Length: 276
Image 1 (tube, rainbow, N blue to C red):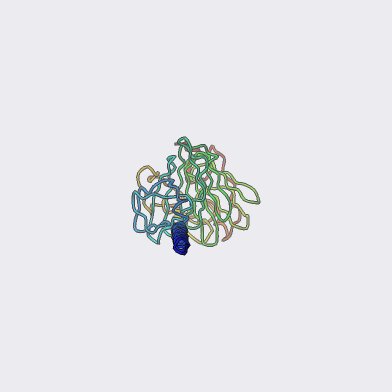
Image 2 (cartoon, rainbow, N blue to C red):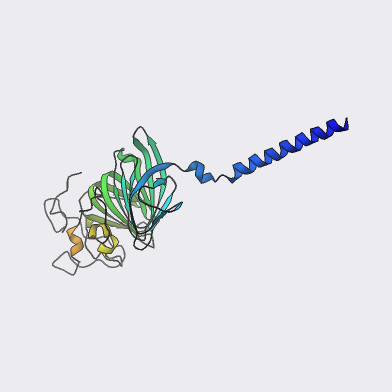
């Protein structure tokens, strides 16, 4: 009888230890490993760009919910599963906030731009699937290529390359429709009207530093509109007789956008670049 009791106690103890071991194994699996969903890959990394798992290299996967950041001289170029392209400039960081991919298209692709510069080129998904969130508002995409800059204080500048884009916050929206037009927004809700980009944007940093892909200060691989440029970055607002006086430091609305048939936009020559 005693032997039977001891045998049952031994079996119970073994089962208890086995249960604890299995539980410990489950707890030890990081939740990120289960949730990590591949959404694209790096097609070029220069110097140092890091993701959630450390330094990235060309060919590495990128994942939903991953934060990607570059050092002072690092740049990275990425392609998502639907063909969307994103390039990250030096001293920059983004977060892949949302990604839903079905039947060869993204049902939703949301990027959080938190610091520095990025270039965006839309893929094959519906325009409504794309969204870029910044500290100053949200950028809606309309079949577009554009560059975005986010400053340390959350100030956001957007320059259009092709297509159209709409920037909105609690105070309203501004729409970009002309190549090399730029708008500037602040976290307090101020948004400037679009105008042709120039070197002196009135934000305390030169336009060619704020947009290094456009000025050629940061390189891009082929397929990322590496040859795109804006003539206005080669000139500054120096006083009346050119583009008018430089805007005050801050966010005063710039001069009204000139008519499509002409005007003094130094970048467009008075017309739209057709979508690519």
